[in-house]
Image (cartoon, rainbow, N blue to C red; front, side, top):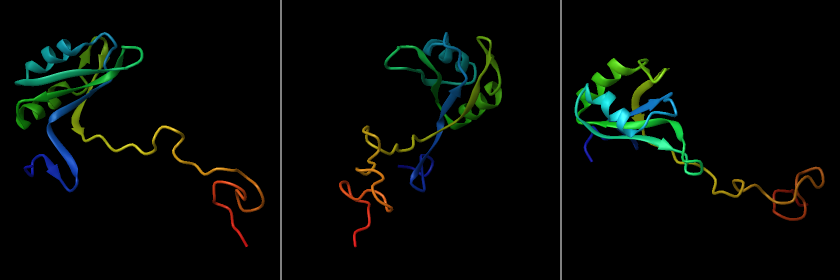
Length: 127
């Protein structure tokens, strides 16, 4: 990886932009057209809810160069699109999410005795 795309263990994404506060009516092609006026658009995607199939109100656009991305941020951040003022900023790498689906690994038992769980699941003091 080059220094432009990787920095101190966290991705620094110069060409990929986050677009927030989107109307639910905005689709991929709408983003493509909006950003095309500011440079080459490599990809444009509105993020959809997997259960409802409806837009989550944000998306990502990847521009052809960092200069084009900066031009798009300057021109479009706060601009009106379908009745809403959109937020456009440099995308950040997705942070790792904790837990694993079943409540995040809390201990068992619960509240027995003065020092937490005494019977099962650990966590209690034993003398």
